[in-house]
Image (cartoon, rainbow, N blue to C red; front, top):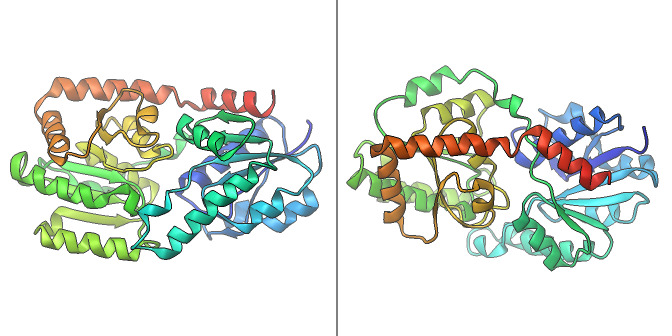
Length: 354
C-alpha cells in the first residue's frame, strides 16, 4: 500500500451525479488497498457521515498522496488546495456556459463565469486533468492543461437494484404515451422545449401523452416559474408533472413507466440519465449537444437540429414501430456494457497509477 487517494468537491449530496462518481472512486481506491476519504465544505445530511471537512486535507495530505478535485463549479477552495504538497488531479464535470443563466439567474451566471476563469488558473498549477467525456477533455485542453485524459463516470449500477416505488407505478402505468426526462430544472436542460414537444405530441401522436420531469428545482426558481406559466399557456394541466428530487425506488419506477426518454438539452458534459434509460430498456431520443452523442454511442435517435416536429415524429415512430423500439433497446443495453464498473475502473487505474 502506498499513498492515499483522497477527493474533494465543495458540496456532496445523495442522488447527485458528481457525488455518486466521487463515492464510487473512493470505494474503488479502497479496494486497491489505498486509504481514501471524501472531503467537502458542505455535506448534505444524508451523506454527512461519509464526508470529512475539507480543512483537514491541509493536515492530512503528504507528497505521496493523490488529491482528486472534482470541478463543476467555481470555489475559492480549489485555489487553496492547489498549493498543497500532493499529486494533484482535476476531474472535470463541466461548467454550464453562463449565457444560459443570463436574464434568469444572475447569481448562477456570475459563478459560472468565475468558475471558467478559475479553470484557466488551475491549469497552471494542476498537472493532470481528467474529463468524464472527450467533450470535457477538449475544454480542459483549451483551458491550458498540459496533460489531459478521459475517464467516464464510474457508475455503481447496484444503486438501481431496488424495487420500483409502487405509488409511482400505480399513478403512471397505462396506455398513454409517457415521455420522461431526468435532470435538474435548469435553462440549459431546455425543459421548456420538452413542454412544447408534449403539446405537439398530444396534437398529432397521442392526445393522452404526458411528460414526467424528474429533477430538483430549488436553485432555479425563476426558470421553474416560467415553465409553470408555459404549461398553463399551452393548457397542458396535469399532463406535465414536476417530481422534484426522487428516491432511488421512485427513479426506478419512473423509468419503468416511461415509453421514451427525450432530451432536448443544449449542454451536457456527459449525460448520465441517457445511460440510465439504456439500463432500464427505455429508448432514447436526444439532441446531439455537448457530450450526448459521445455518451449515447449510436444507441439513440439523435437530433441534429432544433425542430420540435422532428422530435415529435421520432416519438411517434417509437410508438408505432416495434422493430425500431426493439433495436434501440438492444443497442442501449449493449452500450451500458461500455460503462461497466470493470472497464471504467481499469481506465481510471491506468490514468492515476501508470
